[in-house]
Length: 635
Image (cartoon, rainbow, N blue to C red; front, side, top):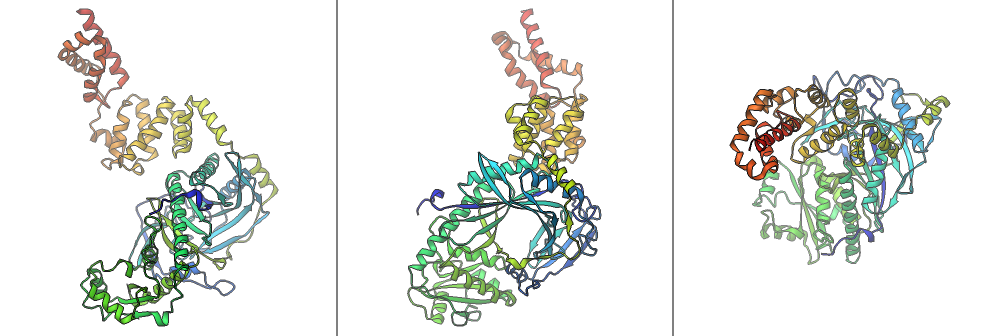
C-alpha cells in the first residue's frame, strides 16, 4: 500500500473560528450562561424542513428531516427563559456583545458595515428550538499576520451558540438549553495552501488575538474550529466541524487530505472500469423473504425488528467497494458512515462477503436474483420501511459521485483526528431574513470606540506578564494561552504567593493530572482560589495542593475541605514535627556518619513519605539539615 505524502495533493484549507464571548448574558435575552446538571423544565419538539423564500428546500435540512428525530429539551430557569424555548420573541441585541465584535473586527482591519441585518440560518438537527440560528454579518475583508504572511479574512459574524447535545440514541435526541443563545463570534478566513502545521499556527494566532481582548470564554467547548478542506482534482470542498483542540486540528486536516486524495484515486480507478450508472427502478431488489433463513445474527436481528432488506446491483463494479488506496480509506467505509446517520447500522457489500455470519448459500441467493456477472458488485442494506428508500437514494447518489467527484459534504471531527459523515453541505436557501429584529445601526461613536480599544498584541501581552509577575517566557506563554489567565491574576493580586508557583500549578500540575485520566472539569475556579487562600494563610503546605486536586479530579471529593479530610492532609504542629525528625535521625545515624551531609537526600525521601502535604518541604529541609549537622558536630 503506497505511503501518503501531503506535499503532493495540493491541500487548500479555509479556517472558521467560532468563539464564545464572555459578556455575562445571552445575545437576545438577559439570562446568564450558567451550565448546570439540574433541570426543572422539560419539553419536546419535532422540527421539519420548510421552503425558502424562493420555494426551495435546503439539502442539509431535508437530510435531518429524514431521520425523524424527536427532540427533548432540558432547561434551568437560572440560565434560560421563554426566548430559548421559542415561546417569546427575542429581546434587544446585547450591547456588550456588539461592542466586542466591533473591537475584534477592528483588530483584524475588517470593513465594518454601517447597518447589520439579522438573518435566520435553517438548522433542524434540534440544536436550536426555533429551527434556525440567528446570525449577523458584521464585516468583510481584513487580515491577520502569521509568520510574516497576511492571511485574509472573508467575513466576521455575530451569532447565537447552539444548545448542548446531551444524548442521541435511536429516535430520541436530547439537548440542554444552558448554552443556547450565548453570543458567538464567527471568523472565516480565506483559503490557504500549506501543510497542517501551518493551519494550526494560523488558528493559534487567531485564538491568541481573541484572548487578548480578555472578553472571550476559555475552556473546552468555548472555541471551535471548522475547516473547509479540498485537494487537487477532487472538485468538492468538505467542511469539517467540531474541532476543539489545536493538536486535533492538525490531525484532522492531515486525515481529511489523505481521505480526499484517496477518493481521487478511487475516481481514477472507476473511470478506468466499465461502470456506467445505477437505476433505482431496475437495480434495486428486495430480499427480505429470501434471507429469512440466513444465519447471520445481524440479519436475524434486522428481521426481528421488522426491517426490510434490499440489495443494490452495481454492474461492472467488482472490487471498487473494498479498494483501499490508503489504509482505512475505502468507498465501502464511506457508504457505511453515510447510512449510519439515518440510524441504520451499516451495509454489507460484495467485496467483504462471505463474512458477518453470511454464508455462500446466502450470497448465491442474491447473485441468482440479480443475475450477476463476474465483474458485478452488490450492496445490501437493512432498515425500517420509513427510512430505507431515502437511504437507498443517498447510497446510489454516493456511488454515482464516486466516479466523478469528491462530494461536498459536512463531516464531523473525531477525538482520534479522523472525520465521519455528518450531513450534506447546506445551500443558499438555508438563509433568510429575521422578521423579529429590525436592522442594527452602527454609529461612528461605536466605530471610534472599537478602534480605540484594540487590545495589545500577543507579544505585548506576554512581555507584560513576564515583567509584571517575573515569569519566564515559557510559563508566561502557557498561562496566557490557558483558560486560567484571569484566575491566575486574581490569585496573585489577592494572595501573597509566588506567581511562578501559581502558574506552574495551573499549567503543569493540573494538566499532568488530566493526562493521568483525571477530570479537570470537576475542579472549579472557586475551589482553586480557595486552595491558594489556605496556602497563603499557612493552613496547608505547597506540597498538599497536588494531592487535594488529585482527590477532587478523581471524583472522591467535591470541595477543598472534603479533599483535605479524605486525603488525610492535616497540618503537623512544631513539637510533633521535631519528634518525628528526631526519630528518623536516630534510626539512621550510621548513614549520617558515613555520608555526612550527603545523607540529606535519602533522609528527605523518608520524611516526605510520612509528611508529604502536611508540612512545607522548605521547612522540613531546613530542620532536617540542622539536625544532621548537630549529629555530625557531636561526633
